[in-house]
Length: 367
Image (tube, rainbow, N blue to C red; front, side, top):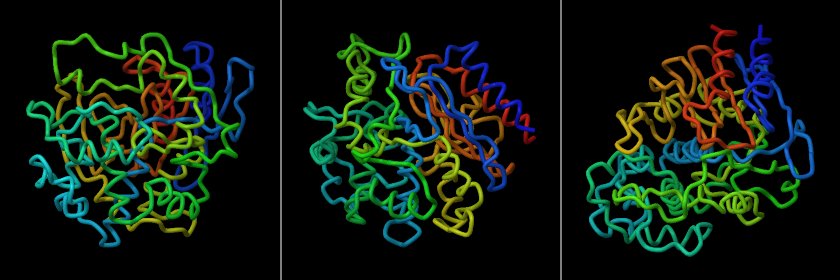
C-alpha cells in the first residue's frame, strides 16, 4: 500500500539530487512509513542513520504552538487576551491591544527587529527590544510572516506564564510522555547525531539587502545569509532552542507528534491535549495572500493550514508547519494520517518537488 511512498523517496535521490533525508508517516496511530537514506555529513561521508537528528527550522513553530495551547487548556492564558496581560512591558509603544492569538497567527505587526541585535541567540535581549518596539506602520505588516520574531514573542509569553522555556515545557509535557526524539535546545550529548545542514543554490542572501522597500528590509532573515550555514551547524545554535526555528528531531518522532494531534491529542493511551484544544489550534485565524511573497497564507493558533499551494498535502483539513528549505510536518485528521519530511539540504525552490512528491504518494496510498 505504501510502496508508492518508498518509490517517491528513492526518486528524490535519483532525480532530485537529495543529499540526506528521512520521511515517516502514521496511519490511524500506526507507524506505516519509516524511511531514511543518503549522507548526513557530506565532508566525512557519514551516512544517514535511523537516529539521525535534523534541524527542521520553522517546523519548530508547530511544537511551540502546542505549548501555548497547553497553557490555554490549563487556564494559564487566554488566546484572545492582550499579550500584555502576561507580559506587561509588551504594552509599550501602542501594543497594549495585540492579542496572544494575533501573535500566533502572524498579525502582531512585528515582523522584524528594528534595533540592532548583537546576538540572535540571546532571547532576553531580543525580547526586550520587541517589547519596546512600536508596531510597524506599514499596513502590509498586519499579515507578514514573522519568521524569527514569532519565536521570541512566543518564548517570552511562555516564560512569563509558566516559568519554563518553550523547550523545557515541550520536553516535559510532550516529548517525554510520547517518547519523542524532538528537541528545542539540543543537549550536547546528542550533537554528534545531528546532520550537517547545507544551503542549496540561490538560498542564501546578502547580509544587508539592497531593497527600496522598508518592509522587505525589516523582514530580511539574518539566518539565511551567506555565512549562515556556519551558524546552523554550530553548538551554540543547536543548544539555543529558538522557538521559531531551532528544533532538531527525527522524522519518525515528528510524525508521531502529529499522529497524536490528528487523533485529538491522545496516542497509545497517552493524552497530551484535549480534542477541543487541538481544534482551537486548528481554527482559522487568518487567511489571505502574503503582501511580500504573493503566495496564499492561512494560520490557526500557530499552525499553518491548507492553502491552494498544498504545501502540507492535498486534504482540506491539513495542518502543521513547514520548515525553510523544504521540510514538512503535519497531519490530515480526516484520513487519520500524519507525516514528517526532514532533509539536510535546504533549497530555495518554491514549490520544492521533494516534499510534494512524497505527500502526493502518501495521499494516493491512503485516499
